[in-house]
Image (tube, rainbow, N blue to C red; front, top):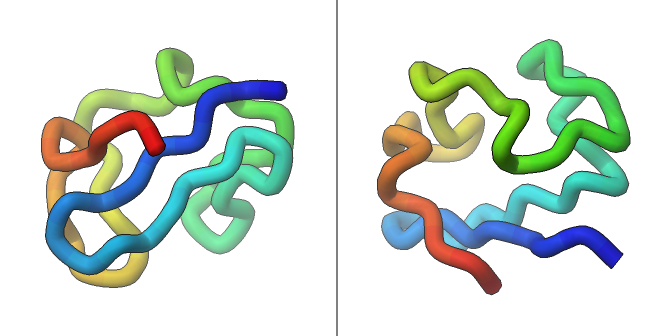
Length: 53
């Protein structure tokens, strides 16, 4: 199972199995493969403010 990452600001969880289709990230996309300029779809926090769940 792939590692999930949680937003330190709003607690949104990125699950690689689900991806973030509404933001153009298809299911199966690993955290490492998400662009560095991606932001949390819930609060807009940068990728750097996510921590492993």
